[in-house]
Length: 295
Ligand SMILES: NC(=O)c1ccc[n+]([C@@H]2O[C@H](COP(=O)([O-])OP(=O)(O)OC[C@H]3O[C@@H](n4cnc5c(N)ncnc54)[C@H](OP(=O)(O)O)[C@@H]3O)[C@@H](O)[C@H]2O)c1
Image 1 (tube, rainbow, N blue to C red):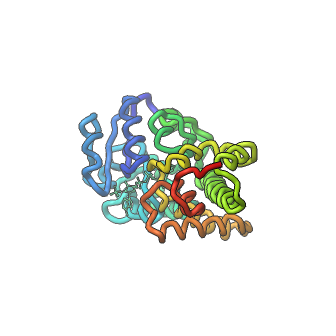
Image 2 (spheres, protein in one colour):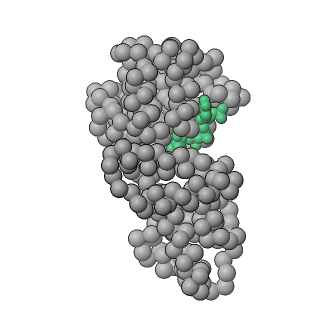
């Protein structure tokens, strides 16, 4: 990668808009495309150019970053006459940074014309990490290609080269399996303590000393205030739980605890919480408002 390069960002949701902003700040030529075009306006006012389709964006960029919701969205932006595959050529590298699992990465590989470079590079961290450039990026794909783009990943955070294509997606699913498991276990242990008559403050003090310490400290303020600011949509966390189940099944890994945890996310989405922050699962599991009861 030259110091300055042309990067297309396909998908300007909560993460994509921040990725594009950081690429602009780093001095790259940035081309953007989003299904809902209005979301590109602010980036265009900062110097990005808006493409008419993912294919057009790919035609004009050395690196094409995809950061969309799920496997279906990835197919929508990569396949068909307007998709990235129609515009990419042998000098393009497609860098898949959504959380879509291994099957979607394999499908993307087959959809792209021969010779197009492909990395799967999903990220760990959320909005504040994306803004400050402190994400972890798991990079799967041919080593030399991964190394070529490490400076670009450096504008978003730290790259961990995880192995061949698909290993980035695998690493991300493993990391998010811990989120699905920990958050639901935290909710259930708090609900148990409530039913056993322990005061909420005491409960949180106890949990802080256990293997759930980190999670309970991070969530304490949200539980106390009842304020769960949107960082990661619950529908996306449910999608991750489903991708984890699918990957485990394909690999013959037995994940009984994770399957049970996933039912909480399914219930939450069915209860209409899909567009809220995923940490609201705690509110659902503890079946209460936010207020701390008396100790
Ligand atoms: N938020 C986080 O903390 C976080 C952290 C790590 C990883 N991730 C992963 O990063 C990815 C993006 O997350 P996000 O939080 O940025 O999601 P988001 O805010 O919900 O944005 C989703 C993006 O996908 C696009 N999209 C959805 N369906 C589409 C379709 N059928 N065709 C074309 N575009 C479509 C949306 O376009 P419109 O604007 O037109 O709806 C939007 O640009 C997800 O895979 C998520 O799991 C998120």
